[in-house]
Every structure is written in C-alpha cells, then in structure tokens.
Image 1 (cartoon, rainbow, N blue to C red):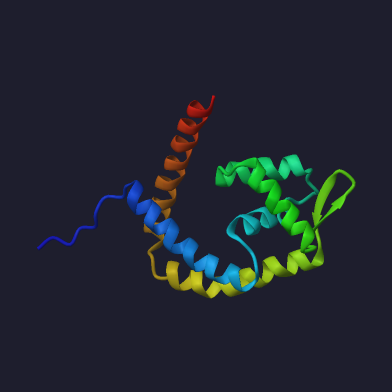
Image 2: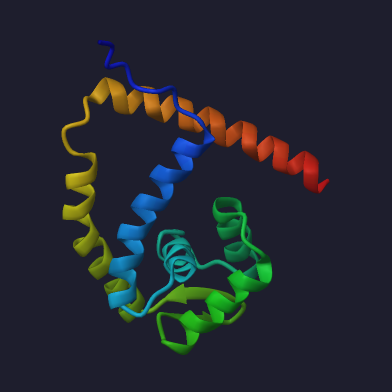
Length: 147
C-alpha cells in the first residue's frame, strides 16, 4: 500500500493557511485585535523608520491584497486604541503597540512550535521554495488582472 502524500495544490495551500490563521485569530481575539489590524501593526512596528499612512497601506496591501479602505480603517482603529500615533505626516508605534505585538508573539510562539515542530529542514526548505514561486506567480497574475 502506498503512503505517498498528495501533491500540493491551491486547495491544500488554502486549508493550511486558514487552519494556521484560525489559531492566530483565536489568540488575536483575546487581545481585541483582528488579523488585518495585527498585520498593519506589525508593518508599523517592524518598519525600522516611521512610515506615512500611504506607505503602510502599500506594505499591507502587498501582503494581504486587501482593499486600501479596509487597511486605512485598521490604521484608524490602531490609532484609536493608541497602538500607533501620528508623528507629523508619519506613523510610529507606541510602547503599548509594541507590547501588544510582543504579547501576541509570546502567545503564538509555542503554538507555532507545535505546528511547525518536527518537520524536517529539507521539507521546510522545499515548501519555502514552492510557496515563494506560487506567491510570485500569483502576484504576477493579479497584477495582470488589475492592470
């Protein structure tokens, strides 16, 4: 009897994404954050230098392919909860925003370790190569569709 794994496809990718996202969203809900808010906050915290709102929208849109209006709503919500602040024409994270992102990271780290742990390095490397290629191709197709 053969025990070969099925070939990866879009459905498998989606199932894996939503399973992992479900775990993350469970943690985020305990902190009163949505997935989009967390991605937006991470973009501001990890930028290295303050970004304009347009730059944040561009970064998040590049990752999530989300509507810019929804990303701006996330920015407004993060500002209202004092996770980010305007500094002139730029946005910067507050200490509370950094702490929030760190708390989410601390909670998700052991969960991620259980999800990803034990997968051989060569399998992770192969999956990384495939997912990078799929992302590049999908981004190219989306660019053609929206041009």
